[in-house]
Length: 341
Image 1 (cartoon, rainbow, N blue to C red):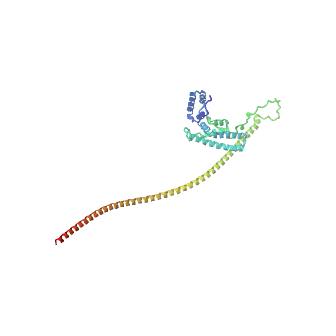
Image 2: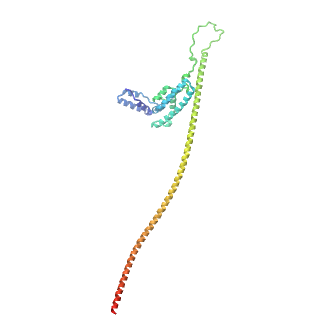
């Protein structure tokens, strides 16, 4: 059988170290239940990474394109170191610092997204940075970083960016042995200078090696100073860009604050107008209530007057009838008296 899949191995190395062993053992048990002893054995051989190695592996698995850029830049940097190309070396050194800084920031972000990661204040970011720097000097470390299967932190203890094969110090013990010489006759050295000792013969070689070391160190120091100048120039450029952005942001802030002030005044004016309208509505409601009361009283008075009119009309009719009856009686009385005469 082919063994564990790349996805399964990456899943294990994405697991935080404190849960790695349990996850690995569970994967081994699954492989055995599936009848795959080869995969189970290979999984059982996987070792738990340190927290630093886990963070670097997490970067390689989550953001492989960034790690690929690091490896490519590391190859270019090692080539420039071997060929001692000063300008290119300074340029690549500045790029290295920028890339490592960006990768460390990305590691911090990836760790913050992991629920079981250590708190931000306890992340070994210095060791992560040292491991990434070691990848620039050691191709084997770079390959391990790119594979995402690093087990422990790495560091480079060499002389900065100076290629180590160039820094070989020759000492007297490294000189070849003296050749066999024919025996001299007694007294042959009489009156002649004493031959140079091994230390005397080794001195020129030692001086040349020390000189080469000094020149290499001086070149490294010059490259370091140039890289620092480039970094300062880059920071100055970023500062100018940030200053421009700050000026624009402050101008926008001033503009929106003026708009806020105007909107606040308009709101206050609107509230005042609304309060006035509500006061007018309240007055109109009061006047309406008074008018409704007056109308109700007027209706009552009209009904009372109608009733009084009805009573008065009826009484007037009754009086008129009584007068007519009385007149009729008087007419009858006057007619009877005339007949009697």
